[in-house]
Length: 308
Image 1 (cartoon, rainbow, N blue to C red):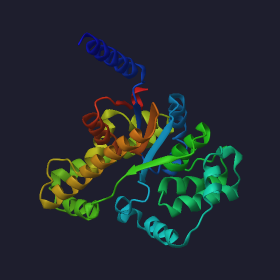
Image 2: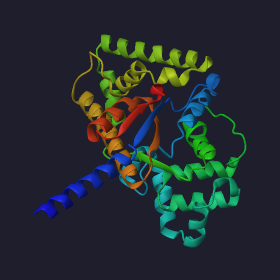
Image 3: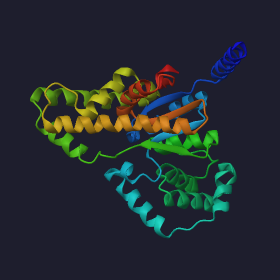
Image 4: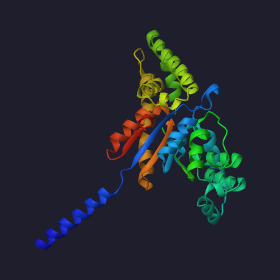
């Protein structure tokens, strides 16, 4: 009995030391504005520098999960059609593709990038398909030209500068069809006061983005808790003066999408042994996704951009 007790104590001690020895997984959530006005198209540059200092080991972004046609939804219908068509006839050299995947991007040429782009299309990997299409056109070593879009200016540049090979899609449009028509109908049927509050929020954030972009503080402005809350409310019409079936439908679809995104993020983290990861996501999602991640996994450390 004494020997059994000693063994039990030894096992528990080793297990505790192993747990304590493991670094806590953490995720940096960066809210973005998707496409910026031309006048401030360089405003993602300071955000890129700040994220690089965090030095993430893995990048997640607002792309659908690999091969998940339901997650692609109606908003990614063109990619879904291209994927299903490519899947029918495309044959690739597994040994060659494996070698390309394991070769640093700085050592690949445009033809090799095109091969990776075609491969990722054939398996329905939207994020890497777009990334390697960009690298095929612009390379992975030269200085980039700002587009004012979060994909080339943030996601692709992080992959280029950190020499990472993959971006992980965590978005899901499954069950999302009908969100936008319901949102429009709910907006149309809202009260005068509700519409006034909505327009005021849009006007404030539009000018706020422009002024912040011109002063090179766009990242800080977008990712202020107040701004993230504003975009969350804009995307789901959370204002007094809106109600009804369409209002509830669009709100539920928006909330479900954020919940699914959080679940997909946790799946990616479970499958990859990394300590620091980053999520590049639309500002309207950042608040809800961060809250859902905390609810689903209390052991995950969630860091917001403005916490850096």
